[in-house]
Each structure stands twice: as C-alpha cells, then as structure tokens.
Image: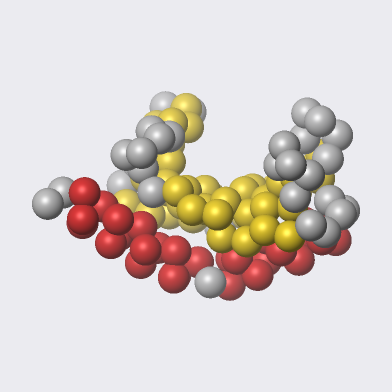
Length: 104
C-alpha cells in the first residue's frame, strides 16, 4: 500500500492510495477538493490492468468515506486520508457485500 500526495492539475493538494482487493480489482482511496470546495475522501473499486485504471459507474463500488469544509492544505489532506485508511477493512467488507448483492 503506497500513498502518493501531490498537487493536482488544479493546484490543490490530493492523496491517492491503491489497496489490493481481488485479482485485478483494487480499492482506490482518493482525497481531494471537490467542485463544491469541500475536502472529500472517496473509496471505490477500480480495475487495474495493462497500466490502465478503469471504473464503471453503478457497477463498481463507490462511496464517499469522509467530507469536511476544511481548507485543502497538505496537512488536512494527509490527516483525512489517513483516517480513512485506518478503516480500510470496513470499506473492503462493504465492497464485498456490494458485489454479493449485485450477483443475486
């Protein structure tokens, strides 16, 4: 599990971590400033294959894990991202449940 923290295309701080899930699927944890100006952390399942990351809306697990109106500083991004990573097993279980219900 490797976390990358940098400034994105819009010049704001962001963090991203990929956590193994099942096969080519991974949990992608992303913390960033959204279009409403909130600092959010999103956990979703993506497929990583041949150097490409793909996500299928409504078919792949996706949830907003945290959201605040804090400023988008490096310290706030690191702090919020770390809090969600501590609870990653909870999101793994939710994702597994999501796919089990989908296969019914």
